Amino acid sequence: MECTVSWTGQAGTRSAMGFVAETGSGHLIAMDGAPDAARPENGGQNLAPRPMETVLAGAGGCTAYDVVMILKRGRHAVERCSVKLTSERAQKDPKVFTKIHLHFTVAGKGIPAAAVERAIALSHDTYCSATIMLGKTAEITTSYELIEA
Image 1 (cartoon, one colour):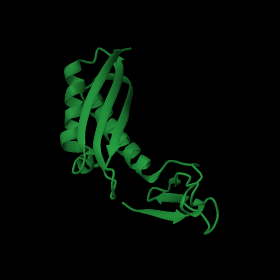
Image 2 (cartoon, rainbow, N blue to C red):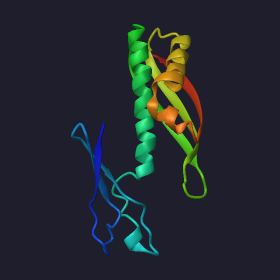
Image 3 (cartoon, rainbow, N blue to C red):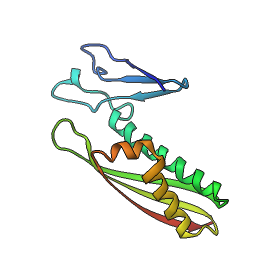
Image 4 (cartoon, helix red, strand yellow):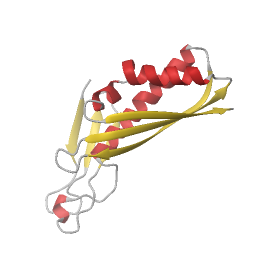
């Protein structure tokens, strides 16, 4: 797996902290910094997610993928799945994630709660590389809501 991240800003401009990542699969991800009124050359324009937001989003995508795949393999009629991630970060550099909570919302026909619990546990404990890696610095907790569709 590879990725190339390129700076899109120009020194001395208000867009000094914009970046574009090109993934090995050929997709683009824009990233930007927060505006810094005191030192505009160090801030961004808030035109795209922060790099750490993309890390959090990637973790959500990784675990949601697992949960849907595990439920589908179990022949459950999954119609929708989302995960809302909330987090806390360390106050000092490096500002790693210290707490991450993942709240899954799964909708489908006749899906047993035990199947959702099992899918989340398997993702958390075995399959999701992103959350397992982030779990080295963060306490990761989960919850879920099951909706009959």
